[in-house]
Amino acid sequence: MTPIPLNDLGRRTSPFREQLAAASDAVVRSGYFVLGPAVANFEREFAGYCGVEHCIGVANGTDALEIALKSAGVSPGDRVALCANAAMYGTSAVIASGAIPCYVDIEPGRSTMDPAELERIASGPDSLRAVIVTHLYGQMADMDAVSACAARHGLSVIEDCAQAHGAIDQKGRRAGSIGDAAAFSFYPTKNLGAIGDAGAVVTRSERVANLARQYRQYGWAGKYDNRLPGGRNSRLDEIQASFLSIMLPSLDAWNQRRRHIAMRYSREILNSRIDIHPCEGSDYVAHLYVVRSRHRDALKAHLASHGIASDIHYPIPDHRQACHAGRFDDVILHVTDRDSETVLTLPCFPELTDDEVSHVIDACNLF
Image (cartoon, rainbow, N blue to C red; front, side):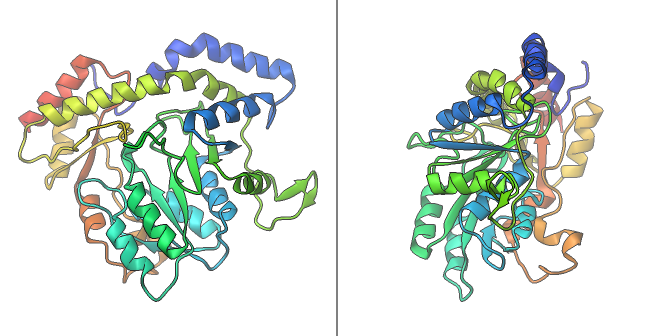
């Protein structure tokens, strides 16, 4: 069998080539290249899709997190709670905001924030200002429990939806519609991906939205009138916005295909050396299908020998990254550390064929 990649963006874009080329040509002809009508159109579409009033297009998902934090009232020196298992994206945004990361452990088997741990930290002597809740791997966190804790302690809630486009909880709420603000990445590999970098902040709050629009463009209240300190040059361009508008109508079908693949893995991988991901319901959009194994390196090599790509998302927790120079050496996150040593990502993208899925399953069961 032809080698099976972890993802294949060529398969993703192939059906849209003519539309994408036409959209690119239309932008070039229009003379509007940044924050023009195509951006405004996508912002309306994506806000409606998420079930919120406002969408603010920015340059990438990490900028979206930083701008969401600032717009929700986080200031330099504030403490922000977040998990440490998502490759420094949230941590980078917190530090760029001048705030202080405060790490919370995750729920076993889910990789999302443990609300009991958040409550324990929020009840401690050092007050928190906000919490970033990451819907990791496309699995929505327990937003009711997190929101209740945040309300008790007066915390702003920022949803990190970079891997959860289109996820819907049991109350029918889309990822991004529950917190005070939410950040999305449209990096090409995301469930809704651009053909380059792009991101967005979404919110129900007009005040947060107005601040986000200022923060994305130098802190301007008007052209060349800088009112907000900490403003950025972080703007969504017309070509990426046009591409996203073309692909947005396919997102729900893509997510359903991802779930179908994930459910096959969960049902059909029957190997005591591999712990599978329980996946049920629309609150999981299978951005990544992650298994756990105490024999991860051997499993990864075994899959490679069968022509199957795999990867580790993510091998080094934020609090153990070398860039911190020991700043967080006293942080203890038992579940996070254990996950970092056992997680392995299998191919799971909408264009994966049924035969390829079967090959992955057979290889896992042969391990």
